[in-house]
Length: 365
Ligand code: CO
Ligand code: CO
Image (cartoon, rainbow, N blue to C red; front, side):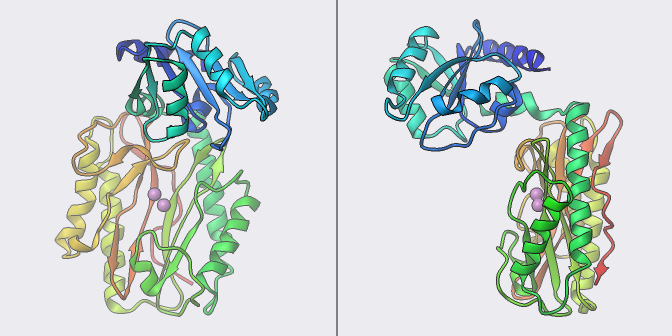
């Protein structure tokens, strides 16, 4: 598996005229090597030359991790006392990085790593390779899809268990805490992001944070949460209510539900990503709420919780079998509340499948 991934990386790097790809800790490094580190003040940088085996510069204390790597990496370790300068120099000389065109992650590499490279690989050119790297990971294989299915199952079980416990008067933060515990309890290795539980006026902001405000009856409660399984993320949203909903919000709920369904119906192989956004948006615009749908319809999902393909106007990229992304239209009425329904969708050879199975009918607790 890893050999195949490394080959694809090298082929594309050659095609783009690169001599080497250099990766910091994150999804790309995990995908290619099975290694996960966190980005800290101690630099970790893996090198994938187009014509030589991979190598990695890392703190000496992290050396044991290399035994779990899916491929062999030549190590350039450094101790805390030494610092990384000599290791950068040695890696640069061994891998002939001076004057090289090095593909890097423009969205992740920090000025620290860039400056070390420019200093110890004189004349090197750092080239953003984000598109190449995300395209490498865009179509999930059967093993990856299985992990994502499991990540969805876990978060759905956790959401179900949490909804059983929600009562009027609990604060948003209390419910978010319950949800966090239930996600780990249901088998999540971790959370791809802190759960969003927002109610009433607070739900009118798509990325509001849970507050200490007690939840009241009749308010929409937007719950956006995910789980990580095998490194892969799920990301789902349901909107629920305690008691009943006032008239307009009930209508808003139905519009969002129809927009979500229209987006999922549109998705399929060969369909431009932006057409899915358009299908969902048209429903909301036709109902007169266009100005209150303030974000794109969705984002790719995988080892990262936001990755290509972005389901947004202006992205003509055709969807391909194995791509996984969210469909998450929402309507946000300032001062009143919000509704969002988010599913995780897989493109199949013949259409699209929702990995999310949680009911989309309004849930009245
Ligand atoms: Co979400
Ligand atoms: Co999302």
